[in-house]
Length: 87
Image (cartoon, rainbow, N blue to C red):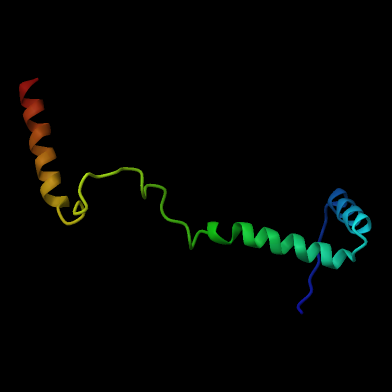
């Protein structure tokens, strides 16, 4: 086991000791459990696993939107230009 401990927050250290005392367990066990729970909770939210924020923002009625992107864009530009010409 690789051990490393650095807690500079005195209040946090006291709370950790209190938990260990109340549960009649060594501080090392309580600390290891706390770190394991933290890592598990945040494992799927690391930057490497996270999708960009825009993913899933919009829905489409068709499943081939990405294949038709250029055609859709051309249609939208044509509609925009028509609207601009009418104003």
